[in-house]
Length: 454
Image 1 (cartoon, helix red, strand yellow):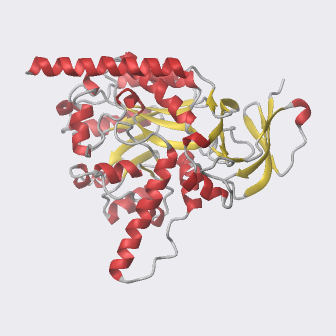
Image 2 (cartoon, one colour):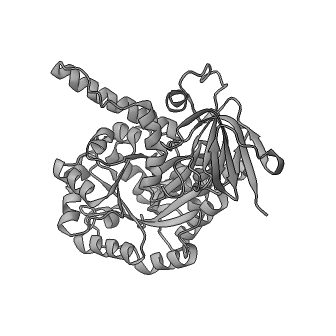
Image 3 (cartoon, helix red, strand yellow):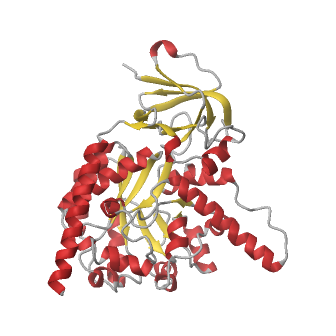
């Protein structure tokens, strides 16, 4: 029997140019798939009806790069630079992480995403210290019901071993095991990628082995490039080009310090770009290159990166990118005494970047990212009657520049309601308990390690 749900009378921002915006519109969902988006749909008789009056209905946000495992150590590095992060997080907390900590982090972290209207997550999981670690991460993602691409990364038991000309490749046999055990099909809510460290961090033999492994298993690749005082000087894309490894299956994260040649290489190869704007400005990665990516014909996406140092919601990232990019352009134009260009970022572009562009970067645009009939129903409703949004004049501005997590009223993933009337339909008390227990365990282990070294 067909399961049907009707979202009635919301202000629909479809992000589909063929449908556009509907000031009062309905969305029909059948068996988890969007089947119609119209001003009025008569289907109440055999459908569950959700009244969207006073709500702005948008596609779910897509976070294309988050180290979800770090949720138990949220806020542990508020003043960190990127260099500090390597020491304070990867060389301090990561080595003492057990599978139970990864599970707690991914459970609480992905529920945090759903609560904030992020329906799709690329989980950049570089915490695979044992084979039990990836199993724990995937189990947590599957339990929350989020749409996620699990990106299998390296272990992090030693900063020196894994991030300084590393000679240790991601274990191919375990990647194959995880692929076969958890991702035999590419059609489910969870899919798989490989989170690689890349040239500069690894010797060429390791880089080539990891790229070869991903392509053998037909999974996409995601890699940090062009960021910060050190890695910004590596010329990583140029190195990948010289190794013959560039391809359309690769997402480049940050991209703050690219040469013009490297931008052309990414664009020409069909690669995709993920930008973490608040982290990049706050931690010294460089200016978020949103407009630079657009100038080269790329479709940039947004990501949270690390909750050790920044908030975990997409509203923050939208504003960080929007404000940062416009500040940069305004400053340059003031210095040159010229008018600002017509290409200045707009609020609608930011919503596009946070939704359909994100789906494109995650390789899931055929499934999600816009309210298009035939796509899966990943939908968010924003309460436009709240004091920080009302009165409503420009619904796009309301979402991108006014709303916050408290305004996320309804979240639907693959046709299943995950948040209703502003409350997650999950055992949040358990998730909080587990993540707090993990925090206590990790802090104790770090303190014990310090005492041993003293």
